[in-house]
Image (cartoon, rainbow, N blue to C red; front, side, top):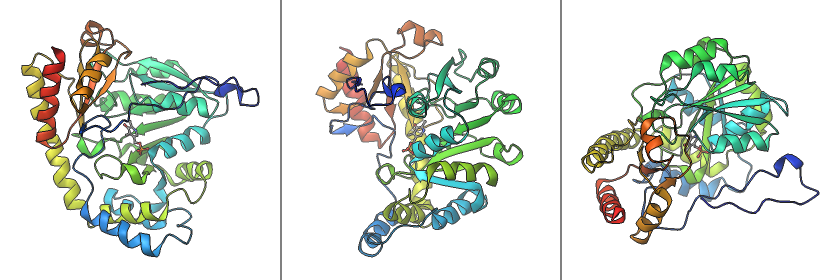
Length: 361
Ligand SMILES: *Cc1c(COP(=O)(O)O)cnc(C)c1O
């Protein structure tokens, strides 16, 4: 990841000086397993809906608060439309939520390692991110999270980039004692053995965020959503503002959630099977990944950045990390270095494994 020059522009907001533009290496590559999007594509029903909407919906404003999408999501999740908030990607939902439930200067507790966007979103809203190391078994450290006394607690399960799921007991303990909102990011819920979604029902301070960027194959359309009590999601909706899900995105998302569901379920199943096959192959190479409940695996390996560059020269993109919090013996052994490999069709994984073998030298 490269960084952009920090601004010293005097007219800029002072707290924005330590924000860099998000800049993962996105140069095109023959095989790209770097960003956990759906390598199989999108449901054909979504593609048809985009074509149809392109000729009928684009000259008018979209719906103010995505009521068609909320209705389709409500059916998918068995929740009521007024327990849903949508956004331009779940990044938009997370951004709006941290703005809605904290005042500038408040703290946001974030597990470490976890989703790299959260500290950025905190700074964007004048909040102070407080990073709390995961336990050695990659669970969230409930006591340490609570000890921050943060106004907002962010949890991500299955967690990116570790791929591991947090234990329900630890999450429940945090929810029970938190002083403010607890955000549970379930971007990878479809690939997991269990979900924490139901926790919102008894806990009016819980917001679960999800996305159509991963299992549903619609990352480019930018559709995400949050689930919580009606009162809670209404605050997020105020903070986010109207018209954020555009007409093509809403059409694609509704089609994916209805006529596209068989396709989505089949490809989730394939991703889970290929993930286990990939994990076994990596273990045979002497590179066991962390146990994953998502559509990617994290592989602790030394010198991850030069390794990724050599793989790129062989036409394969994966995501390297060189400064992960060394919370476990495996991550300590590599000095916080690891590569994250997304799961896709098996031929893409085979190409990736060959490139990895050759690049390890
Ligand atoms: C990919 C991802 C998201 C999704 O972001 P969108 O804005 O919905 O594309 C959210 N959280 C985590 C942890 C992710 O990895």
